[in-house]
Image (cartoon, rainbow, N blue to C red; front, side, top):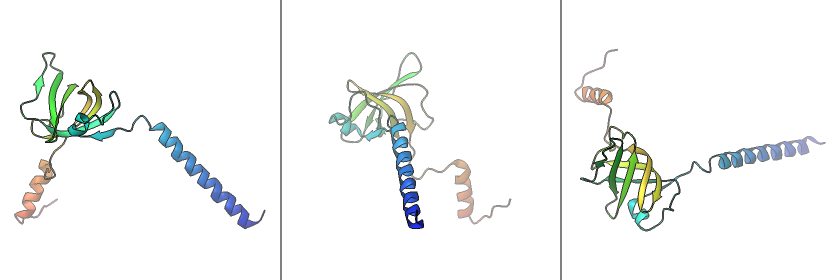
Length: 146
């Protein structure tokens, strides 16, 4: 076999291996993909019942209700156009509060979003206290001695 043909066979084999790896990865992750929807999308019926999706928006003020079992929480998420009721059983993140952004992972069941996970979002100006002190010192012209 000529060297040119050997290179072509090697390139073709490498391409087939990469394609096989990509297809295996896609097949393995097919159930892990979840689509992002807003409350307006859910109200319009774009989110399939029972399919794993993400719901994002602002936690509506005055909507957070803790159930007597102490673990279940009910609230509404809004995007300014529509609102979607959410039920979650578990411990909510520290940043979760009314009027703040949240992303819930779960499923739509009979018009209510049943969340498996709640992710609280902070605004883009958020800075951890440790870094906030450092930034304030630098603005004041102090140097950090280590």
